[in-house]
Image (cartoon, rainbow, N blue to C red; front, side, top):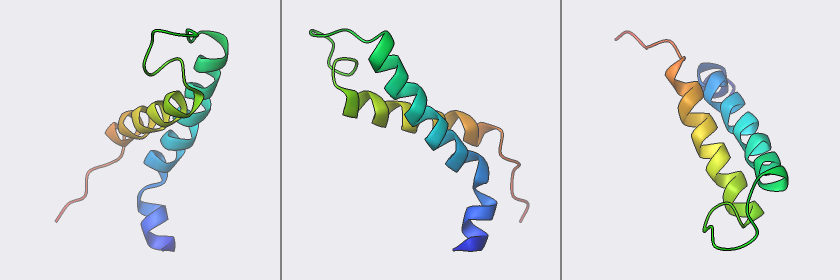
Length: 65
């Protein structure tokens, strides 16, 4: 488990950063109705976590076989 976390530290940081960013986006920018993702704090937090993990995983060094 420790080795797996060590190999994927950037995506894990990205998930947490994206979740926090998604929540704050919902709180300060998101609309109240009519928007399927931005009107619900749980969906926006999950969407931010997924996007943060994907974006941060781009910067992870590739594994050589």
